[in-house]
Amino acid sequence: MRAVAPMSCPRRPALLGAMIALPFLSACVSTPQTATQAVPMNASAETRQLAEVKDNLDAADRMGAPVPATASSDGVRPLKGMGFAQIAGQPGKTTNEKRLMAIRAARMDALRDLTEQVHGIKINAQTTIAHAVVRDDSLSAIVQGTLRGARTLRVTPKGSDSYEVEMVLDRETVAYIVRAMKGRV
Image (cartoon, rainbow, N blue to C red; front, side, top):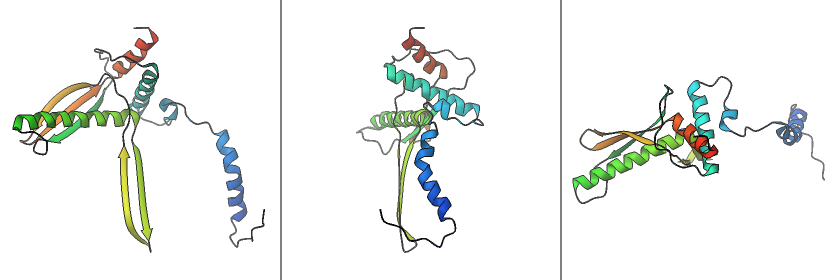
């Protein structure tokens, strides 16, 4: 090991000590195992509900859960996903074919929105700077997850060239999946 020349920075010993201690300190910090454990103490009720839904869906995925038929409502707000699509940009020979494809695209967009709420979104960003000028800036987002029990609430034409689809995932539906897998339905 070779010696490093001393720096003129007065914070060098503190910085060096922090760099050496970091691997040891990170072993002492416990990482949350579930979304519910990761929720901060001052989180809203909606955030806590989302964390519970995610944990329940993750548990159902590990168990290979079936799709429930229906679920009752007890006043807890469900998770809602919205999706939009234009008719003109869809493939198809007739206007009706294009409308059906727009509804399908809007439904998939609504499912993506629900999946993002339950499982989160992974964002990758990269910025290249040369000579103090931004040369390239790119951003990509990935949503990945499994949903069961999502229902279509409504399909609404918006104007003459688009559709809006609203889908819902009830908290009770997620709880039903978990109970079904545990044999307590």
